[in-house]
Image (cartoon, rainbow, N blue to C red; front, side, top):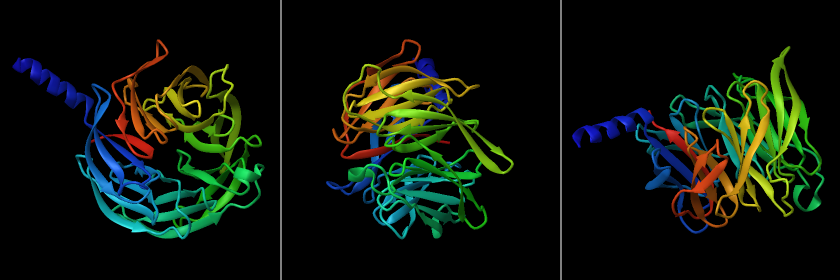
Length: 362
């Protein structure tokens, strides 16, 4: 019995320890971020603690794994992360505009980029050596008129993310059906636009992800529910994107109203995972490492309403979905070979959830 217990403990050490950070709106409570312990053996989570912060609509972890940044009504909040995954508040800074909807860091963690849906703005913040957020380095208001007056009448920046070579910032705009590409000055944080990727009219490019090798980009389009696949390279000091594929996030026989929303890449880069609001489903694609092309494996329900964000465990055995309108977190066991997804125990109650991250400690 002792040897069996030791074996289980050693297995856990080999797999590592994980936490899951969940964030959301705070209309009915004060805690914007909840920290869960995530069990990689069962794919389930146990609540550990809560962080008081208003309307944490999106969170992001620095690439060095030491800091967590969160959107808040007051701008951007910075937290340090200890060895157990607990958060310590560092500071908060204003972004001189309306509340953001997305944030990320560059690959040196020198800057935080904030996407502004409500005011159509991209904001660049510098960071201090201790991970806290500092001053505004640049702020760019997108300009123009969209094609859908009742929703996309003006610019709405939904995502701001660096290419993996850390040379260009890509800002998706669901109002303009464009992704603007900016070169960044790594000393000043200033942006200069160098290209525009134009999506189909009324498609609403929502978020962008890059493959682990940085050679391919995946843009999910909210209103037309598909993913555009691009090759990417830096050529003669200019970004070159070429579209090579478009794949639907919905089943071929789907006839209702739906909107593609979250897009994630598995830790090993083998799978692309997308969520659909309206259809309330998850679509999982296998990825060809050499060509970057996608093959849809399945589209299955998440047993919740409006899956705002999804994530998978490191070994691709489990999937977690945070469902904004049903106020739940749902859990699933994945079998990629059999192309199936089965609910893994009861849902957890989580009010107005918007974003989640499974993070390996250590």
